[in-house]
Image (cartoon, rainbow, N blue to C red; front, side, top):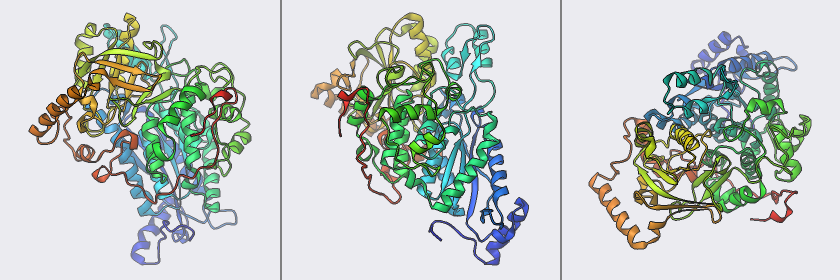
Length: 622
């Protein structure tokens, strides 16, 4: 055997008997039970995101079964039955206490697949993934198992339309009318925003991470953008996936051969160029960790390089929701993700020599797919982009000494003067307090308020919920009143959030980060010239010391946990409370908060430097 992690069924009758029985029930040759195992896995949960997964898993399983046998051109392998993981629904649970399970669900997906992959000893896996956290957990498990594997997106949902106005709608549209005074109108939008099935259709976290997975090399590029109900997902794609997996097994091409330092960097650059979700800075470190690189921000890309690329080098190419007009299905209609990759390759921004799951380099895959030129309406050229600067920026400063705070610049709708926002702190000890104020006293919010929501980080919540509900209400409030209200938190945001919203502020409040010491009325400065997030009052050492001492006494008087932290009332939440690592390290659950890496490896440098040939003055080596 080439692969030591592959488990073979030996000749012991006790271990063989159920394997023989399974082969008969699945309709495969019992003589193959002693060969390496292959199978299909899928992600499932309680939302429309997952409704199409089972059909794709069945189609791929059927195609895989048709290729298995002992004939000349057959795959001489043991077929295992499909397995599924579970997850919560981000779309349904946003704004509720149950949203604390969303990011934890990434870890549950990882753990469930780890058990399946390792205990079954799969030598080859095809995964169908939906929503946004389960795909990352799936990829992480595949990287740790490190046997030939390939991923297919289940696909995005089509946008809905308001039958009265013809306006395109999606789930963000529904969240944005939550504060509307007319209950009939709210219900009307809810009924028409999400028809059909598939994962969120805008450039939210799902499509950001599916694009990331494609560009990092673990999903064929043409399989990212088509809608969940696109017939290719049940007809053409299953056969292609099986052939690619067979070739990977034959060549012993494994996930860690594909997910290298430069492929990760490529994927981050593409995330910038599509105005992608801030969650990419949470998930990229976890994917890197699973690939053997324990500290993304030191080994793969420093915050300084990230900001240089986003600020000067990488423009936004897509006119996509939530900051623009179009959805992922529109990107598919103009040629798919491969169009974006081709444009960035031609501009010099991506390393095209990295390997992918198709057995080709990234550049060769794009060439074989005959990727079209950009259309200039949905996807813009690098020379004349939709927005001149990349969609994301990480911030330091006295509120973010971890350099963890993240702003989706592509989604900012106003409030920056000379790249600076100065606001007045309005503090909420948790998301529920903010939602109550938005429900009951929305008029109390004033221009240039900077809302602070704390004790919602990985440990404090526990679970680091995203905040699509309050950000959507704030967006609507600001648009209606012509004001700017910012929001910063140690939690995170949906990819559907827009506005001056800053997440992942760390260290988090529950662990004594500076965000815990802000008081109502403090001046908060967001400076994108220096990429700093600052509370002016905390620049005074005496003020900082006094507030920190008061916070430490409160924690000590409460048995070591700040009373404003959420309740850890299940084993999963208790695990998150005591093991969650910071967002900069992926926000995952690791014993003693020490990031665990299976078979660490060096992040080898290729010598490739991202350049924008239309902006040669921005060339800079790091």
